[in-house]
Length: 385
Image: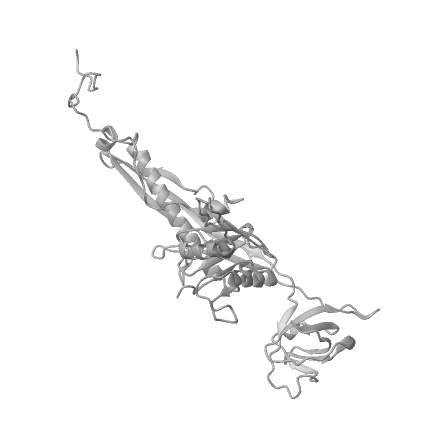
């Protein structure tokens, strides 16, 4: 028989009398789950540029604060300085938040940021004004038959993030591909799967904690393009124990969660539906219901796991992620967050040219985070320190 170069059924060495007993299972214990990405789900659309942009707008503000420490009589003063006089119009009814006195604006000086008001409007009782007092515009009353007031409007803001390339190289020799592996049918496919798991893990970590470079954020031949993560976007609703009247507890408390949700509700139309925490803060959330936990003599199971928190400001799913920094709690509106791939660049395998007796390639993905209206989200930081 001529030589074909292929093995026949009976060719090769025979098995030993006692073969190795190895299970066809490869056990993996390294953390690779992505609970936040799973909770957010797939995006509605892909990005089409490495510089990803979206538009945001807001209504004209109806709040401000007093910026005047020169009162001679805070019960009768009819003029005071505010932070932004251009937010007010003649005819506005205004009041200090948490007070009952209503004042009527009779003059606005935008040059000095000064308001002139009628105190105790409509028979309301005068209350003391004070520096940094929060003002609320109740509404404006126009004169019958009056000319139209000057138009006011807000400018749409363009927000930006950048795509980040995630890549890992796979290389398997011809011999590795040919030999019979234990627990693995195809070594190349197995390596692809492992590298993809690692990149998905890194993507979730970057979505939470990533930062863009200080300069040349679009990247260059020497500057790696990195995306901004959720934490770097949030600036309006940042809560720290003992700062600005926030409860001082270093262990996360229900009072802190409720106050943070209330502040986010007051400042935006967002609906927080995800509370993303690490292990330490998850255990503290579980303790919220400890005082009401009951057992009977026949109880043989202890349940100590809060999966959702329902408050006056909505129902929040508790998401446990390993990549949330200790002492930090993210309060997120998932409808305003998308983890978006660059078009055609979701995780995939790309073969590389062979330069020898091996198969090689890269697992590649390019993603960014679109976080809309950062004041619809919040973060509690500085716990446990």
